[in-house]
Amino acid sequence: MVTNEPDEIERIVMEYVSGVVDFDFQRAENAWHKDGLKITFDKERNELVTETIIETRPDLSPDQIELIKSKISQKSNIESVDRTGNAANVKLVWLSERDGNIHEYTDYILLLNLENEWKIVAKVSDVRKVD
Image (cartoon, rainbow, N blue to C red; front, side, top):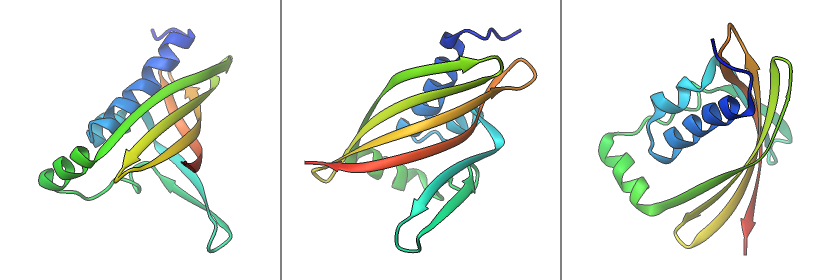
């Protein structure tokens, strides 16, 4: 049985993070419910965009992945975990550097404990360029 402790919630989120950093898409997706949603705002069209985790998987060859990995530096930090019963919220802050540009991403990740297993069910993000 999976515990409801914040450590287990953090472990699931860090599995997602590790998968993203290593470009191991299957590992990242394993932390998510198969219907989990990434929610973003398209400023140009002035509308919300919702996609499942599977729909956002890049279609990259191993060579393309290695090239991108060599150009990107990413690190993340869990800033907070809040849990009530079978629902949790994690604030995750990333710093990503590519081609001399640094961006800070703040993810608000929602998790549910489904059948004694924590899964990410949604993520809302904000991004800003760091000067």
